[in-house]
Length: 100
Image 1 (cartoon, one colour):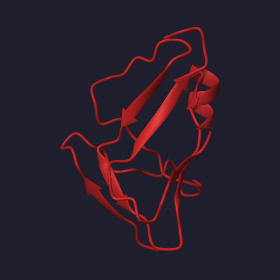
Image 2: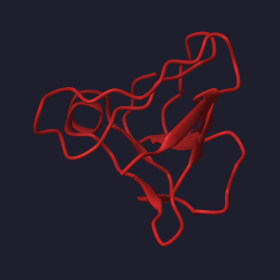
Image 3: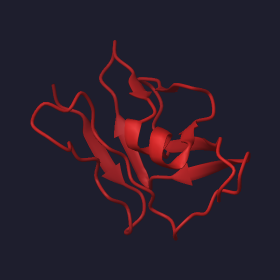
Image 4: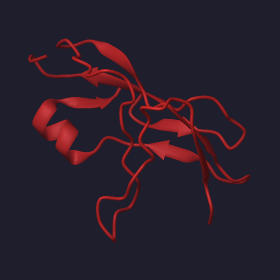
């Protein structure tokens, strides 16, 4: 299946797979470095738009490393990218830890 990706920001990084057997691709922040204060929520800009094929959706899940090492998780637990959405993909992250 082909998924078209468009960079909306020159700093954007196209999603990548960490290993040959990765279940999903990693998204990247396209903005300047972000510090999320403890127990707050922030929108992370990826700088990309994705064309999800009709009949499918994109899903954004927490990664083990961010959750266990930094206490970061998607604020709504699972992000959904609808097949007809063509705007910038953003991730709403919450810092559940006591550290910035």
